[in-house]
Length: 150
Image 1 (cartoon, rainbow, N blue to C red):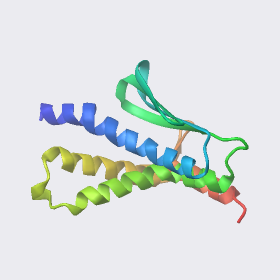
Image 2: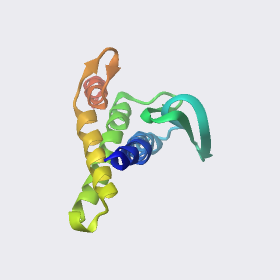
Image 3: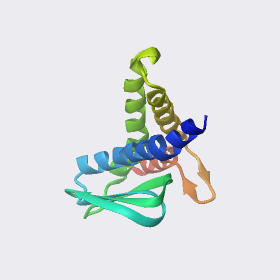
Image 4: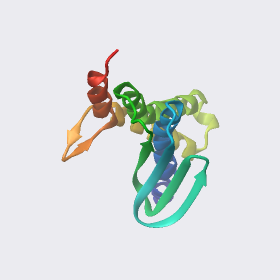
């Protein structure tokens, strides 16, 4: 049980959060982002690296959420912002679905937890909610989608 909690906090959650933020970045790159940043965790910076236009920052409490920033001049359109906002839950959903396709008996326990965590991120972040100044990806999607001109 303790090992499961450690596995969840220090491996599964940070990887799931990275995949989620990478979904936002992938859509931003499709729409020609000039720079993208992924920040995983909170607290002081413990590690950073760069891959092309993407910079990744890992903070001390790397299991404590994450966010991405994407820059483009001129700014992204509302339609592009809608797709970027839903990109995180979409990638989590794809990863969860692909892992779920394997029979449970053939998966190590950690993969099953990883599948569940990605499914959890996909579902919860798709729902539109706004709590104490925090907007979910689903909320942002509908906000931008309503503002887009088709």
